[in-house]
Image 1 (spheres, rainbow, N blue to C red):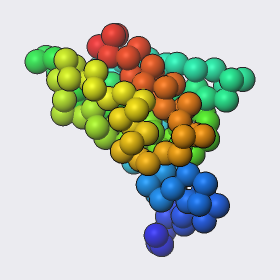
Image 2 (image 1 turned 45 degrees about the vertical axis):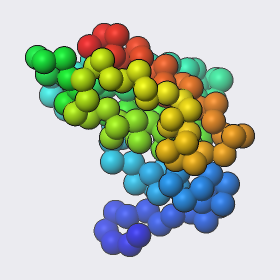
Image 3 (image 1 turned 135 degrees about the vertical axis):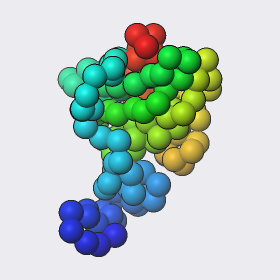
Image 4 (image 1 turned 180 degrees about the vertical axis):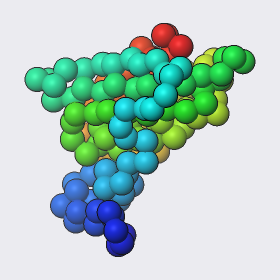
Length: 133
C-alpha cells in the first residue's frame, strides 16, 4: 500500500498475526469517534488487562444498525477485530448481531489462537453497544 497517508504493512505484524490482521491494523476504516448525533456506545475490557474496546452504533427506526465506529487499545488483532466487526454490523438488524461472535471474528481474520483473547473483548463491546441501541 502506498500513497499519501498510507501506512505500509509491517512484515513483523503480518508474520505474527497474518495478512488480514496486518492490513486492517495498517488502515482501519472504522476507527475513531463518530461525528454527529444518534450514536450509542458500549465498551469492554480494561487497559491494564491489555485490551479495551469501545464500539459506537448508529441505528435506524426499523431496528437496524446503519453504521459503526470503534476505539481500541490492544494488540493488532484487537484493532483488526474491531474494524472487521464494524464493517460486519453495518446494514444488519439488531436481532442478527448475535452470530458475530469472537470465534467468527477470529475465523474471518484467521487470527492465530495465541492472539484470540482480544476478540472476546470486541464481542463484549458489541453486546454492550447493542444493548444500549
